[in-house]
Image (tube, rainbow, N blue to C red; front, side, top):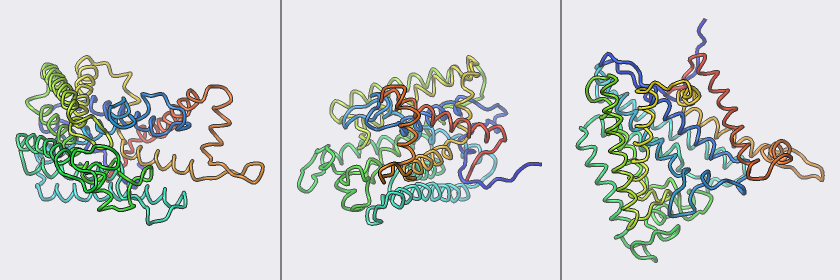
Length: 398
């Protein structure tokens, strides 16, 4: 008997089946998605924020680390999925209007789930609702998905490329030329940038609690994030071009690699005038990370679908099959570990996270290695949970 499950997220839009072309599924997309979401869970859940190896921490401000690649990689994958899933549905006869309503519904649900996590933080830590954060990671995914999906449905790849370029150039102009009251034009610090000023003006105190002066997933910086998603849409067009065969996959992998090298180099060069910066999501950062994502997609395509090296990738396929669900549930789990209090001698209490970390990891290793061991353990626990869903063919969807 097949169990009925209540669905919350949709992974179908992240599955590439060339049904319209008579081809078979490309596992490389699931692998890339799985690597990205596993890395996201890893860097978001250290044992202690005071001891983290530098590749697993964000850059202080300008510049980048491997961790700064993860979120744009996920948005890029969302863009690839839009082309593959909506393109297939269009081929099967779904109307633009029906698909647009579906995209709007999915976007609203994902945004609401992100807001639910923020409400959980507010309630769990006793903050006032006057400081409830409005934006966040899932909220940005929702907005970028909706914008890119609607653009995909009513335009071709040339228009999509033109919009992406216009967003990057326009954002560059806004951030460097528009004067900010009290700071002037071209200020790119945490307080005086145009995006920080706009977030404070529109959202007030409802911004990221780590600073209360800017939001790393703010309003204006969503524009270049949409361009990142559109880069994935364009990569999806390239994957869909022509019939699927081993020879065409080789050509597509080479084309992606070349495009990735050009975009990565372009972002680095642009960074000399408009610094690479994740919290501001500068245009150079968007171009650089889109190029890096294209390179990784090309590598996955070559290794998994062309060369046939697939056994190593099984855990990442498991992660990738329920990626958004994994992000939501692992974030919720980390929140619970932080707000559940355990009484200690002396009348004090500690968060469950701190108790487990101190008892299970601190006694046998250094703080930085213990912190990493905690993060890896957390990822492996969720791999086990996702494996159970995968084995039962349960894919949590909207």
